[in-house]
Image 1 (cartoon, rainbow, N blue to C red):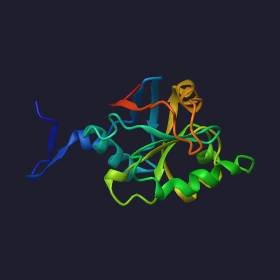
Image 2 (spheres, rainbow, N blue to C red):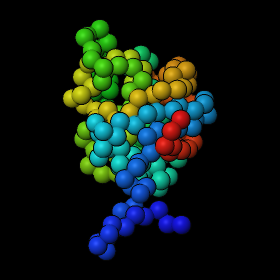
Image 3 (cartoon, rainbow, N blue to C red):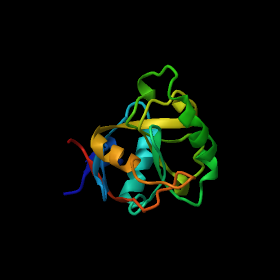
Length: 178
């Protein structure tokens, strides 16, 4: 049976999958799984783009290419660092400032400067970050697997905060409920 609904007196149809998007994503890594609640109401366009990219397998094998303890773990295309490098490197010094809910640890975001799908990067905060709203669109929150995020955060890195041993997103599974 097809997942479409037709309206009486109308030749159009609506894809039910589109009108009821997944509310959660499971990021599988070699260190374990990270369950994320997606903020469909507050960031619908970004969530839609994330879901579409997940369905296309965009995040499979994506490396965590920057890991800054007590700040952020970042997954994305290692060849496109310039857009976010400055704020990730300077931002780690702001841990002592006042924060709001969106600035809390274990939030999922992507940079606001995101010209195309190829550059879609994932940030999971590991500490409060006061300038988060200026730099990132927060579109989710880790609800299970905080220990996995912390384990990734503890990997050995070089002077550029790149992990010495590769760690990647193996797969992303979208779910309605957890």
